[in-house]
Image (cartoon, rainbow, N blue to C red):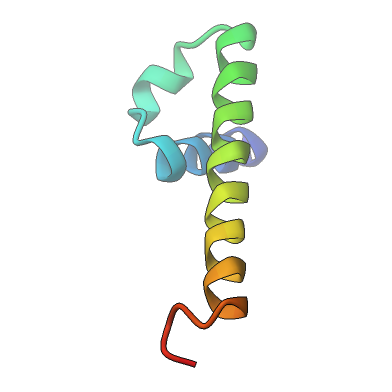
Length: 59
């Protein structure tokens, strides 16, 4: 159950999907949400790394 809770939190934080909705989601829907959440976090990492490397933050 702890793994499910972590997955729900991960998706909720990335996409804002309600945790109760996630508990009722099918396996296919959860798979889709996880892929979207992964893309969201990868994009954030790229923006942060790109900003630091290009001096966007005043460096």
